[in-house]
Amino acid sequence: MEFRDYYEILGIPKDASQDEIRKKFRKLARKYHPDVAKVKQGSETKFKEINEAYEVLGDPEKRKKYDALGPNWNQASAPNSEDSYYGASGSDDYEYQFKGTGFSDFFEQMFGAGARSGGGSYSRFTSDPNHGQRAATASQDAYADILVSLEEVMNGAERTLQLKQINRATGQIEIKSTRIRIPKGISEGQLVRCAGLGSPSINGGPPGDLFLNVKLEKHPYFQAIDSDLYYHLSLAPWEAVLGAEVTVKSLESPVKIKIPPLTENGTELRIKNKGLPSGSSGSHGDLYAVIHIATPTQTSEQENDQWRKLAEVSSFNPRNPEN
Image 1 (cartoon, rainbow, N blue to C red):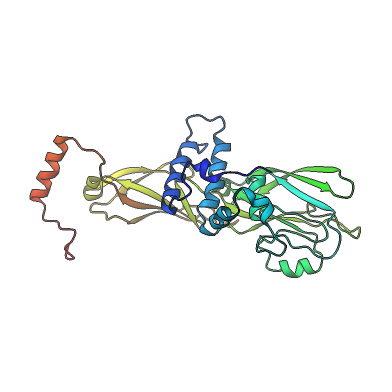
Image 2: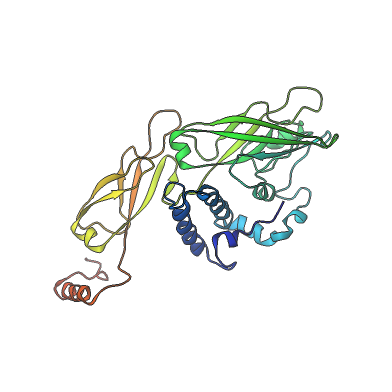
């Protein structure tokens, strides 16, 4: 398993700040997102690489571990460490590798998003509240993360999941492919159960199940909080002051909204029922356009003349609390 240089993938130095990492991710994500990429070929793969890199570097704890282990990651894990695998009684006969979860093999191995199974061992990284008890009783269930896009949450989806089992006793590789369903309205932290894809039982019983812990893929335009979506909407100063009609992106078709006159920076404009589905209820959350008043980065002399005239006639003082 080759080391993946997430700093190189994002094109940032190793001492980049969290704000710099976030800005670079947004820039690259807008360029390579499959819906907007000018060059479609390879854009989906590139976008997933960018997402995976940001999943790690955008999280201070994961970044700390990644920086500490680096290229020596596969030599550094010790038994019973915070991210090591637990094993119960029985023989460790099988090792599992999953394809189709949206994460690379490197990520799954380094951050416990993959799962090993056999004799009840499984990844410590799991949402199962009873994982300690299950390990103690030689549970045959396996756990892994799955990366789900907001578009998949909006519409539901199907994935092909490939499970490669390496039988340590025989050395044989056993491969299973199955279609799994991503339910519409699924949320981060929910578990998708794949019946019968866990470890073969050590006592001849039926195999356990595979549980996939949902992680939401970062999006270049939207932030999801529960079933609500938040969109960063930039306005020119005159649009915020005079009001305007602008087009806002959504996960479906674009929406036109009216900007009231004298709209302040940070204002959240609510667009009803344009968020994510709320489970299987049929209802949707809302989309919030969060106002950011942008200033020009370059101006002509003619424009500067207009700004000077405005400064001369305006009584507005942003440093006066009464304004």
